[in-house]
Length: 330
Image 1 (cartoon, rainbow, N blue to C red):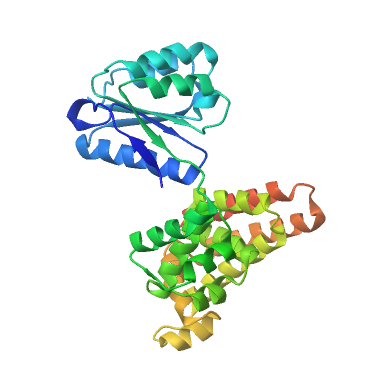
Image 2 (tube, one colour):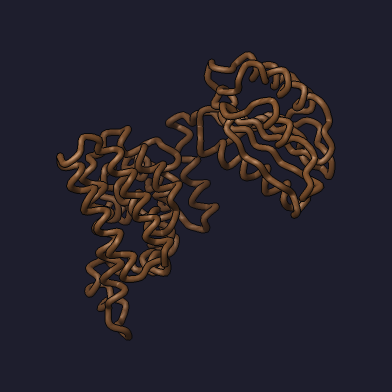
């Protein structure tokens, strides 16, 4: 879990400058979200700008941190601070070290050696609140899983937490996605048998996590899961298979006769009864035309990863985006 050191707060009780640092991307993203949520609660009209440090110049930095014509309060989130051009270091330090009325400044650094000089100087500034997001150790993961399940309103049977970690791996995004799926599909009670039945192995976990995320409209999460899958050696054909299976299942659900009992509907669709809940949530974003378009995109990607093209990873990313676009056309 992220840890923080407290310091002075800006106008309205908000932390004026927050430095989010560390290699754990999920925790860093949540820390940024937490800061922005508090800022919006304090000032609902706040104007938020998020930029990549590598794309900044002096003019753009002044623009995002200066007064706005549209809102009395601003929030500027600068991500990947390690990529900040060296000639902007002093400007960022000056901005972070002085009180700027009605500005919330969030600086995000991955914690590596690149840009460490700037990072160390920022840590020493009194107005800066530091939120550390370190990589979790293996022994910390069960606690993370338990906290995720509790926060989502579920319960975790004994030994299920470690079993989920063994099945999914140590990636926090994958674990969090798996927990959300299980909570949705099991009415909140997660046990070893359910994990084994639903996921059946690490490669399948990742492939179906990609499919479930994009079918539900969570494109960013789907891309994150896909990149993790490809980086850990999951066969591309498993991803296209999971996408095709998910789309066909939604097609069967859309075309199923009305009035069926839960068990009969599950048999008609070809899934366990506990899977219907998440499928009903997904299907709200789809119609027959969108499903047909998405299936064609997946079929094209399947041919690509089986040799029709040389870059399987690109073909999969293209398929995820195409499926997402087909859904949004509803």
